[in-house]
Amino acid sequence: MDADRAGNAAANGGRILARSLVYGPVPSRRLGRSVGINNIPPKICSYSCIYCQLGRTPMTQVEPRPFYKPAKLIEAVETKLDQTREKREQVDYVTFVPDGEPTLDANLGEEIDVLKGLGAKLAVITNGSLLWRKDVRKNLLKADWLSLKIDAVDDEIWRRIDRPHKSLNLDTILQGMLKFAKSFNGELTTETMLIRDINDSEHEINKIAAFLAALKPAKAYLAIPTRPPAERIEPATEQTLNTAYQTFSKRLSGVEYLIGYEGNAFASTGNVVEDLLSITAVHPMREDAVAEFLENAGVGWSTIQELVDSGNLISLDYQGKKYYMRKLPTLSLSHS
Ligand code: SF4
Image (cartoon, helix red, strand yellow):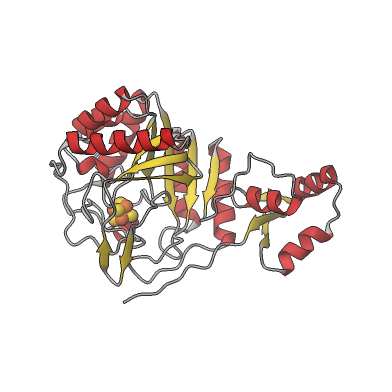
C-alpha cells in the first residue's frame, strides 16, 4: 500500500503522524487524481515490512474489527467530493490507502457499497495477506481497481521482507489471491518492492514472475522504497530492476516501474528531454527504440549523452543489448 501513500503521513523518528480520515485529491501515477481514505489508524497492519515508511508495526494483527463509524467516514468522503466539485477539481478514484492494512477494517464491505452508490470509482491498495478469507475476498470483489503486494513467493524471503503476523501462511495467501483473481472483474494490479540482497535474486524474481503469470494482473509494478524505510535497507539497483523488468515482461504484458517519479509516459509534453525521462521512469528503453524516438523528434544522440553525463539517465546491458532507464532517486536513509 505504499507507492501511493500520500498526504501528511510520516514516520518521524519512530513517531507516526496521523493523517485525516479523508484527504486529497492527490496526483497518483496509477490512479490519476485520487481522494484517499484512511480507514485504519496508524499503524495497524498484518505485516511489518522492512521498507515500511511508517516505521515498524508495534503489534501485527489479523482479525478485522471496526475502527471508525462507516457513517462518519462516508460523510467525510461526501464532503470532500462536494468540495472538489465546487473547485471543479477532477477526481478519478476514491482510494482506500490507509496507515495500515485496509482489509483489517470490519466495515470495509459496507463502506465500499455506500461509496459506490455515490458514483465514485473505488480503488483499494492492500497487502493481500487476508485474501485467504472469504469475507475479505467478497468485500474486495466490489472494488474497481485493486493493488496486491507480492514481494516474495519463497516463505523465508517473505518472512524477512514483510515480517507477517505469526499466524499467516504464504501458500494460503497466494492461493487466496489466485482464487480472488479468477472472479474479480475490476482492474487487478500488483506491486513488488525489490530490496537489495533480500528478494532481488534472479531465482526469486523468476519465481515471482511465474506466480504473476498465473495471477494475470492487468499491470505488475516493480517498485523500490523511495521514502525512509523502517529498517536500514538498500533498494535494488538499476541493473537488477532492468533484469526484473525483462524477466516479468517475458511472462506478463503490462509491467511498469514505480520508482518515485510521477512521470506519465502516455502524455507527450513535446519536450524531448522531459518525455524521455518520463518514459524511462516507467520502463527501460532499448537503444534502438531511443534512436527511433530521437529521430522522430529530429534530435541528435548527444541529448542522451548529456542526460547520462548529468546523472539523469543510466545505460544498462541485458543479454547483449543496451537499455536506458531513469536513474533511481536517492533514498534518504535517515533514522532515529
Ligand atoms: S503492508 Fe507493509 S508497507 Fe504496507 S502498511 Fe503494512 S507494514 Fe507498512
